[in-house]
Length: 406
Image (tube, rainbow, N blue to C red; front, side, top):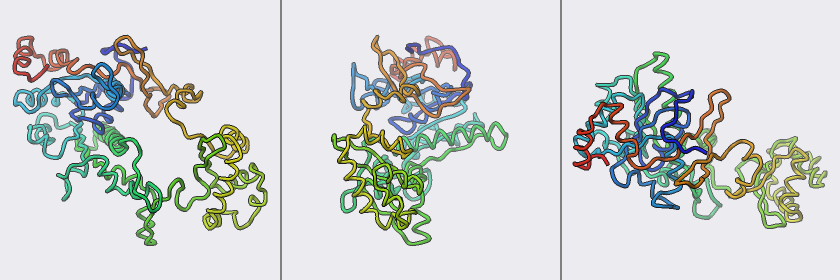
């Protein structure tokens, strides 16, 4: 069980890399969490008082959200009012000691505080400056408000997600923010590698939420360009791949069956005693199965209705057919594979244990780990400003008196 907030340095891939995180809510902080998990020293700048708004989002205990303990892991919290000249000056000095800056404000906000990349690279030309926004730093939409929900719509994801003839559906997650955070972390590591290989000095990593999601849209663009096809929503199926669907079993639980490979389809049909379909030349390849998708789905739906979900999965797995349940979080905790893969890590909050998700990917020789949960607002203000910038106690007291730090 991890309780320390200043543990000894571990040998991690990003050990020795200092990151100043100016982001709030999800995209920037998620990128920072990934870097911190793999060894970077992440100093999170938060407004004095309540700090990052995510501290109060969703389920809360003792004034702090459970989510914060996950997304704030391994970070040092420094409270700093960036709207003041003195606060911005301290932030600039911190950035001068850093390898990376992450921010996810609306374009122009950091510049208004004198903390834009052009300003900071004067003192620190090797700085990697990651900017996350809805629409990127350039273009006619750059200054539009860029919430993930809106950007998911513009990216094309929402259009294809849902059932034909119904309103587009969103996952019950801020998936656009998380995808953008992943792209930012990837871009940062590429920029650091380019700097190490002396291909460049520091550079700006410009991450747009809508572009990050657009990056995952598979064949949507070339199919439209080459064949004029507009991918439409397809409910629980995937357009042009058959069979792959979700089916309701006799016990009221859903399972997913992916039988779209040619040999897999034959094994699937044999497993449900439909050798006639397994050996039907018209269904031997995907094109033939696409033509008869409603028929194939009806056969699989009828079979699933005749059997309980666990028995169905076991029977299909025995035939080497990809199949599995639809999990909620309680199912994840109960699953032996999740446990064997160490997908939960335990921290202690006010003497009580709390499980948070481990982070992927798993590195064989230099794995990441959770060293401590999200800290209190400004928990590391004094240690960071004295040890990193050399501020005296009297200077800190003066800043506290002006409410620039907590």
